[in-house]
Image 1 (cartoon, rainbow, N blue to C red):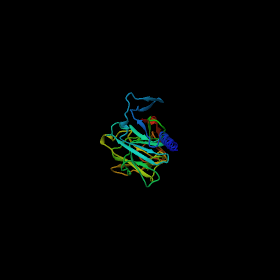
Image 2 (cartoon, rainbow, N blue to C red; image 1 turned 180 degrees about the vertical axis):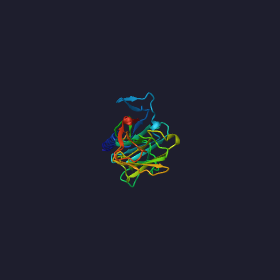
Image 3 (cartoon, rainbow, N blue to C red; image 1 turned 90 degrees about the vertical axis):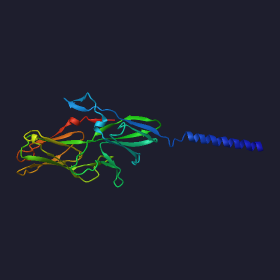
Image 4 (spheres, rainbow, N blue to C red; image 1 turned 135 degrees about the vertical axis):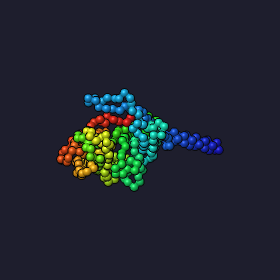
Length: 295
């Protein structure tokens, strides 16, 4: 009887041990896998006779991106963590991260400062100390989904230019009596929700100005330009000229639109008398149309 009980206890011990070992081999909790997002040089693309052409000298990632943000969200839309890099970072643009198995949304932002906002419906990013009249940097963006299963991942990412550019070019000569020019664009954006690229705040305005040098007076084809983030709704461009001896009414150009990675060019007479309605020609220049930042 004692031997029989002893054999039962031994059998129960081995059965329990086997069950414990089996549960360990099938429980992947806590296991992480490495995901590498690599960066390299990029070829700046230009349009030439409607054909794409790559410059012989590649542009580097660092030429376009001075501040770089990497944000990770889980499948519930919660921010898991983020990494910031700048021009002093070794291997700027290269990110190595580790993930538990699952699906994630990863967002890359170049040349912008990210604020992790708790009071809004989502995170947003914006230019440092953006105020009406401040200049904006060129910036790049990409959002992608990754699924981590049971292996490491090496992935390259291409960032798209979100910036547009507005140019105003005079078809007449800068008079000797005009000292400066100011251009106001409204509405203008200085910030965006990370996930949607829509502005989280009310509409503002953006102003650029220029004081003419003596050598610029008497010259034709003067051009003033700015990066611009409003690519969603029409805006108004107001041009003011400031001469020494008399007043010129502002030039108001309504219903102007922009597109990401393109130049909106407004051409017309800036300095010769008053400007009649429809006196400016608006066109899109596709010079940026194939520009991407390759990671």
